[in-house]
Amino acid sequence: MEFPSKLIEDAVNEVAKLPGIGKKTALRMVLHLVKEAEGKTTALTEALNRMRHNIRFCNTCHNISDSDDCAICSSHRRDKSVLCVVEESRDVMAIENTAQFTGVYHVLGGIISPMNGVGPSDLKIDALVERVAKAQGSIKEIILALSPTMEGDTTAFYINRRLSNFSVKITSIARGVSVGGDLEYTDEITLGRSISGRVPFQV
Image (cartoon, rainbow, N blue to C red; front, side, top):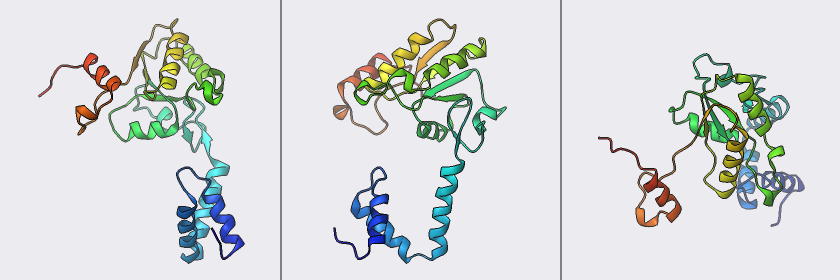
């Protein structure tokens, strides 16, 4: 790809490093910024700089936060007896968008993946065990909301084993057929789990 300017080329190469963005998309973004008023480009760069330098992680749940304690952990409206374990901060956002969960979270920072060199010590699993221990029985349920993959199941199994000495109910999110999906296109594992995990019919 030929560039009219080394400055444009450098900018495109940096933008293209973002996940899901190729060189052509990066070029469109950069050329758009070139045409925009300087103030808009400056506002973008300043926002990114503030994010990079000021972003924090909650001391309790390890979710992305603007302060040492995130808004969820510090809220008196959240049910602290129910703890939802997720892989990343984006999973917290996804669950929050459903407006169906009123408990609190624990962000692992990933899942166990030997193929990628990620072991239990690389995640916030020890912090989770310590958190449950310090709660002294006030945490009644732990929901394992992890990806339905081999790595996710491995992580869930490991966490379940680490927490086996605590008198806490451990559950996992339901797995089933997506709304609007056809059974014939559903994979066998998902369909099998949907059958075995069936629930009473509600009108």
